[in-house]
Each structure stands twice: as C-alpha cells, then as structure tokens.
Amino acid sequence: MCSTSKLWDCGGDGGWKWEMEVIRNVVIILNMEDMSMGEDRISQLSDPILHDILTSFPTKDVVATSILSRRWRYLWMTVPKLKFCHKRCRSPPYPETERFMSYVDEVLRLHDLSCLKKFSLEYYGMFNAAPFEEFRIRAWISKITEHRVQDLHLSIMLKEPFVFPNCLFTCSSLIVLKLALGSLKLGASVSFPTLKILQLREVTILDGHLIEKLFCCSQVLEELHIQACTLVNAKNFCVSAPALKCFTLENCELAINAELENYCGALTDVEIMIHAPKLVFFSYKTYLVNEIIICKFDSPMNAYMDVPTDVNYDLEREEGQQRIGYSSSRLLQGLTEVKELTISGNIFQGVEQDLNEDSRILETVPAHLMLHLKEVRFNQFEGHAEELYAVKFFLKNARDLHRITIRCLRSLSLDLKTEVEEMEKSLTDPSDFKASIIIFEESSYCEEPFFEIEYLYRSK
Image 1 (cartoon, rainbow, N blue to C red):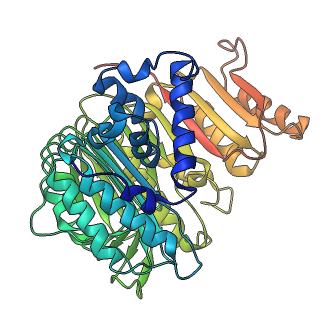
Image 2 (cartoon, rainbow, N blue to C red):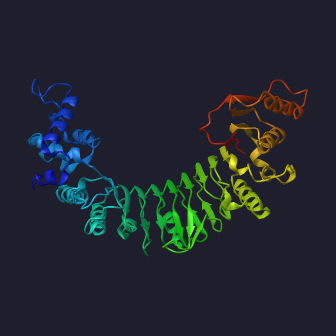
Image 3 (spheres, one colour):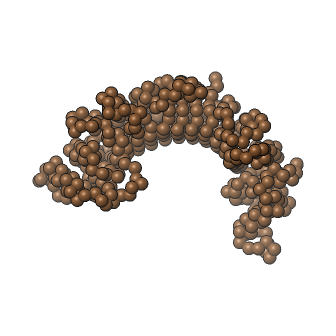
C-alpha cells in the first residue's frame, strides 16, 4: 500500500511535528494515562471501535494518526467518514487552496473508498480560484458516488456558479443528500431508490419546471427541506412522496433565467400541490404562492406558517390584501387534520388598515380548525388593533379553548391588560365563567411575533 508521507506536504498548517503532538495528546486523553508510563490500551481495540472514535475527529487529524505506530499506519484508510472544509482566502497566489485540493486528491487516492459511508465537503473558493478547481471537485464527487456512498453533504461556492454533476442524481446508494450554494441542473434521468433525506439550501435550481422530478423519484423519501433556493422558470409542481413525513419550504424565490437578469422575487405565481399521506410536519416560511393544495393525510400533523408581509406585497393596496387573504385561507383549508399549528403574526398584522372586522383574514379560517382548539399563544404582544382583534376572535369562536397565553414586555400598560381582561368577560357567559383563561407572561425584545395554536385531535 502507498505511503502517506505526501499528505504532510499537502496538509500544511504547522507540519508533521505539530500534528504528531496533537494526535499523541488525543490518544493520551482516550487512554486516560501517559503513554510513556502505561500500556497503550487504545491500540488494542478492534478496528470498528477505533473507526467510531476516529469519525468524531476532522479528517486531517484522522490521517495524522498514521504516524503513531504500525497499528495506526493504515487504519485511517478504512474509516467510514471523510470531512473536508476549505475557507475562502483573498490573498494571491492562493497557496492554501492548491495545497488543500492536492491534499484531498491524495486522501481519495489512498483511502479504500469501498468502506466509505459518509462524505462531506465544504469548499468556499469564491475569491481564490485554483487551476481546474471545478474539474477536480466534479471528479471527487464522481469518484465518491461510484463507490456507493450513503450520506453525502456538499456545500460549494466558486467564483462562477458550480453545477452539481449528473452522477449525483443516479446514485442508487444515497440515503442522505444535502446540497448547498451551487446550481442544480436536472438530467433526463433521476433515480433515488434509497434516498430518505433531501436538503437543498441556497441552491439555484436551473430547471425549475422539472423540480418535481426530485420529489417523485424516490418512494422512500421521508424528509424534504428546500431552504432559500431560487427556482428558474418554475411552474406549477406537485410534491408527491408516499413516505414523506417532514416537509419544509423556506424563503424560496423565482427567476426567469439562470443569469437572474429577470428576477421575479417571491413564488407568488406558482401553484404547489402536496400529496404526502404520511406527512406529520409541514413548515411553510416564505411568501405565499398563488395556491397550495394539500391532499388528505393519514394522521394529524404539526404545521408552521410564517409569511413575510413586506413591501413586495404592497399591502396598503386592496389587491395585496386580497392575495394574502385568499392564499392564506386556501392553505388553512388544506390543513384538515392538525395537532399543533403555529402561525406567524405577519399573517394578521398589516392585512387590514381599518377596523372592519368583517373583512379580516381570521374570518376565513375554516370552522373545523376551531373545533378542537385548546390553546393559543401570542409572542411579543404589543397591543396593536390586529392583535386585540385576534384575541377577541379566538375567544368568540373557539368554544373549547382552555388557555390564551400572551407574552408581552413588562412595559405593557396595565390599562391594556385590563382591556383584554374586560374583553374576555364580555365574550364569556357569566354562568360558565370560573376563572380567566388568559395568562400574561414576560417576553424579551429578541422574540419574533407569532401565534401558536394547539389542537387536541379527536378521531372520527
């Protein structure tokens, strides 16, 4: 087997003497005694146990253990996990970048990749491009996927957008795939027969109109997270996954072309259909799309809704209010079976500028959502008209309500608290009134405003 001596030249950062001292200290700690005064018990452990220990250390330190003794010389070559991280550097001629890439080349050449289960690469080379860096990174990914890796994390930022290679989307061994910061161009063939977790973060999806291929290609997908992604030419799509249990959609945007010259902003004109009968958690934290259609679930779930209401919606105009009202109502109507529902205060605040309660968005909440309502929590309550209206609405319509918790600053006036309490009394039948269900708690300035609603699900 090849020697690992070249790795010291590639690694840098202090040289082999410093690395040896670090690893010797690690071994001493694990042995709980000085190696010079006692038996080296850790080296007597089996390879699987040592592999478990080594996976908790950075790959560079794991490779450095090869200098400890003959027992450790080749052990690192069969560890099931490799993790590489390169931070950006602005200083030419970028020797750190070239040294890092050569180091990864050498590790992948020497490692027995048939033993590899998890591979993680964080590469931020936006300001320090190395020769053929994109070609080399794509070669690493291709080599890893050929050896049936199960857990793959890639976060790549180059001077020019990095397009993930097509070999990713036909890797039949993947169970976990997490991609960040690059661009994704879907090929003709997409197949994830064993994929259970898919996470896309700050990824530009160049074939936005084909995005549903990612969701429909795996019959065992259980978690889907799409966070801060840009969809190019996105159209209506369906998230159809029979085994999906967790789905989060956060801060996604729409663009007409890959150069983002015709940037459109929010996904306001996109219609999304969710067909996931096993879903137990749904988090929606982005601008409301034109419509979200949610098919019936097999069991009650937890849901979270946080809808920004900034100038992009121009809420002072009637059409902006109507868009929020219609989209929110349609989304809520799809949540036929929920155990706990968290709704951001932004859905209510700013929707109406006057006090005409008949046109407020809460009036569109489906009756079935109020039937088993047990608890409502207000965070960062400031006593605005919209907040007072929301309290009144829940007191009036949630007949089985047990508690309303209002978290507010200590500076909230006693007059306002009294107003809330008087409103409660006016909406409660005196013959049934025993004790106030409104509880005030002190909050901090750093909390975000939201409404949290809990339901007690009752089977039919």
